[in-house]
Image 1 (tube, rainbow, N blue to C red):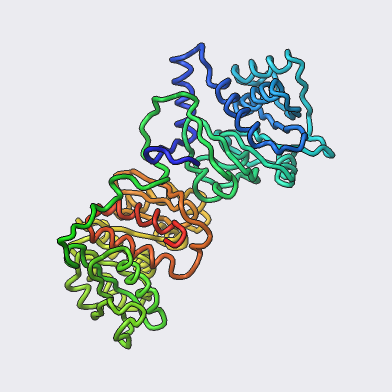
Image 2 (image 1 turned 180 degrees about the vertical axis):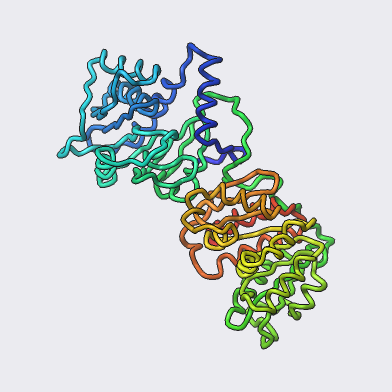
Length: 464
């Protein structure tokens, strides 16, 4: 997906439907379907394998199917052989889609009721369902989707792969696994998180010439903006110019988590980092001897500018006391790992977090988020954005709900979905590194929410 000048906004299904209605009311003689069909035909022509095989277009009963029909007409005028498959009821088509079908049939186009079983294709265009799907796909349509997923040719989905919930990224029964998705008007959150990235493939955005779009609380974090960037370092500076990070954790057997966070904070530019491990046998980090060591109690009682607590903390009585003390830190506080698990089992601690006046950041994975919200991991994954926003509200905190398409939410209701990262991050210690990176950026002067977005984006870069 080409990077936009600024992180592009995210629109859910209701937003898109409202934009469609507003455009139709303001431009009754300029429907968007011909533009969507033209954009589809242009991309399909570029993606179709150069084998001489026809392009298969699957058209559903709504406007998504109408887009596919317009594209079929245009592809045929360009010399492509096309096979259009649909079981849409002509009497129940929306007006724009009905006009597209009429044009196709008047031009001599034909419609097959099923996918030819023995024909090979150079491209499949999935126009079955768009962003408004509200039920699980089953029966004959599920068989079509299975057949498409088994084909040895590229697949282009329109707006969203059929079967993928465009708001949440969850699969409704089954879903097309597209190589490319051409999405219209704006990006949809479900394309970027949960199962979305595995089903959408490469994203292409076409705004269809609609240049006035409503404000939304969500963005796709496709790049770092000015607010994410630290100022250039002055030559006349010293270690105290770049902040002091403290990290509390590292119970016996889990010291590495604390050291990973501390090392990441140094690597991200913090001027000083002090680590307080519960395992008192640690006297030096030979891998990174610049790390200073202190007792965790002294760090909690007199915290540095930014404090991280949780990596390798465990859930002992001592850990509980350290977390309770850390919540009184006057500066920014990042809670990760066992600090989150302690919050989940102690309502008093959780209430203390919500009443902090300094910025608070929580970086849960889905399991930790489920414990914090008293629900299941499946429920978190079924609605990742909603879950992260609930956490932000409940704890008055900046949240990074980790996973594919990490969701970053803020107490004011804004959210971002990160577009970097990959399965290489699915490894022990990855979250500890993220915690240290975010703390270092805050220590150097970034606002807490901007620092969390920056850290997540950088963490997802190869080698980040």
